[in-house]
Amino acid sequence: MWTVISEKLTDILKNIEGVGLVLSYMPVISTVSDLLALDIVDGNKQVNFWIVERQAFRINRENTNTCTQEWIHTFRISGWKSTTGRNSSYVDFQNLVENIMEAFSANITLGLPNSTMALSPSVNRIDVSWVGDYMCNFVDISMPVRELRTVNYV
Image (cartoon, rainbow, N blue to C red; front, side):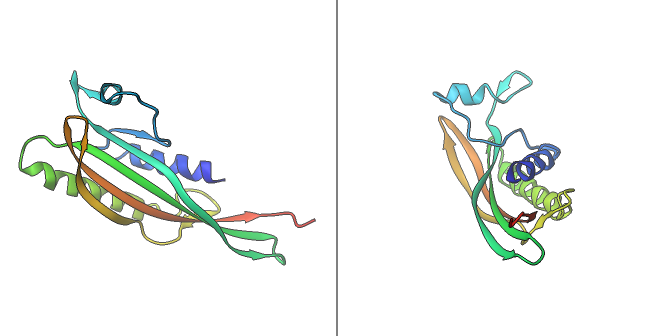
């Protein structure tokens, strides 16, 4: 199931130093203050949150002889992190993104019996984004995951 894959991706991301709050859904918020309240470090409000969501999926192949289906899920990881006002903030964020890519590349099976990365994760965009009055570094990562499912054709 895709939810198990999503949970595993979320768990891997949560264990990377420098990654803040990780959610497997887009939170419903009414104000930027609500969002900032989600991630308070040492009493300071900051933006440092990451969202893992399934963006697309397809059944790639079916084999009625072996009763299997190959599913390809495309997960999207979006991350926002406040800039610190230092020139190194951009470099620090780039290094964090590299650490994220390395963590996922080191876990190509995701520790799941019927799933594996279909392709290497891909950084689609690194940019600057605004969350309310906060200037943030932003990243958009795509992660295709292959899942084999056993099906009953009776």
